[in-house]
Every structure is written in structure tokens, then in C-alpha cells.
Image 1: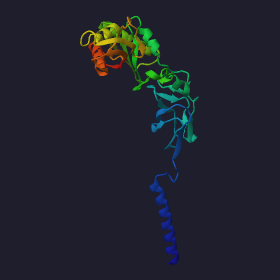
Image 2 (image 1 turned 45 degrees about the horizontal axis):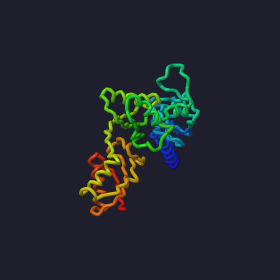
Image 3 (image 1 turned 180 degrees about the horizontal axis):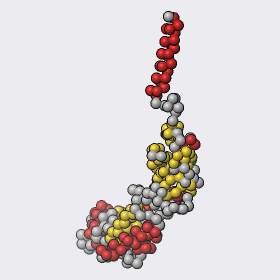
Length: 311
């Protein structure tokens, strides 16, 4: 009887072990998956990395990602490159048994839409081709010189930031949004305005940029009050003899000195500074300054600093 109980215990133990193996679904304990790792040692940001239908996500420069995949799988690595709308794949098919694959600058890749027999290109060369040099402000002004008068670029937005004071910029992704605002002073027709916009847009297209917005705005010019007009207005205050010995010693527009007889015309927003010396028994400094400001306000200028100095 003791032998019968012993045999039954052994049989139960063997059955229990065989039952555990069947519940794991591993074909008798054989593991069918491996860890496949992709490393990005290149300087190129990779987007939407996929192998054999398995998503590996994004791979920034210097990054790595690892996924559990089926053993014995193989296929190309498909991905996008940041700044490009094209789809790429590796020239080399990757086996899951390789355990890892490393992207380097010289890794050979292909555009998935390329014709059969197309030559593979180094990853870094594809990435570098996505960048270009922005057209210079002087090139824009020259392009419009025959159509617009007093052309000037007042806004040069690159990806939402005005870079007008920090040009030139040599390496910009060609898909970067660019917005240019140009001002001019002559009257033009709608057709001429559209032509001006087209000229600037073509300049950027030739440089490789397509996401470009162009604004061309007319600026109305106003005649500056002449030296003689300012002096005459002051000396006539309160009747003859109340303000005398008027002398304008400083008259600048946007930092440029304006001489008598050469006042010219400027936009209303121009920064004007003027210094006047005078003698008067009736009017003080504030009254003289207010009078000068009024003269410029009537001429449509409001950004003015007046310094009146009694003798």
C-alpha cells in the first residue's frame, strides 16, 4: 500500500509540471521574442520609426529605443526625417537576430518613392539638403527696385520670430514658415502690388523655401515743416517782437540731420528731434515747445521731441 501511495504522488507531480508548461503557451518553454534596439548616433532627428509594422517612435540625435519583437523577423526600417515630407527606408534589411541597429551619418537610405535602381544616399546628405540660406534684405530690395520707390523690409519673420536685426542666417529648414513685410512710398495698382509679391516669393522659392507669406504695404509720406516755417511761426507769436532771435541748432529725422532747404518728406511715424534757441519777454520754454509740436502735428508728425532753450 505504501508503494501505491508513493507512485501516485510521483504521477501527480509529473502531471502538474506538464500542465504548467502548457498554460504558458511557449511551445514547451521556448521563448519566441527578442529585444531589438535602434540607436541614433547620427546628427539627424528621425520621426515615426517603424520595423515590420512595429512602432519604435521618434529617435532624436543621440537617442535609442528598444522593443520586444518576434524572433526570426526581418525587414527594412522605415522612417521620416524632421523637416521633410518624404518617406525613407534603410538600404539594409535588419534581422531581429541582430539584436540592434545603429543609425550613423553615413547610413545608406532610400526614398520609398524612388524608382527601381535608384542609388542610396547617406543619411546626413539627405538631411543637409533640407536646409538653405535665406535671401538677404538687400536682395529683396534690389528685386523690387524697378517697381517700388523707397523700398525697405520692415519685418523678416522666421518661424514666428523677427530676425531682421540678426541676418544673415545660413542654415534654415526649407519648410520653415517665413513672413516678409515690405514698405514703399509710391502709388501702385493692384496688379503691380501682386507682381511685387510674386517677385519676392520667387526669390525665396529659388532659394528652396516654399512656406512664405509676403506683405507689400504703401507708406504715405508727409512734408516736414521747413526751418523757415518753424522760425516764422515762433516770431509771429503774440504779434511782432514778442519772440526774437530764433535759431534752430538741431533738426534730425530718424537720427539723420535735416538742413535748411532740404527738409524732404517722411512717414508719419518718423522720430523727429528739434532744438530751438529763442528770446521772448512773453513766452516761456513750455509755450514755445508746445507751439513747435503743434506745427509738426498739423504736418501729420506726432513722434517729436522738442527742446526750447531761452537765451
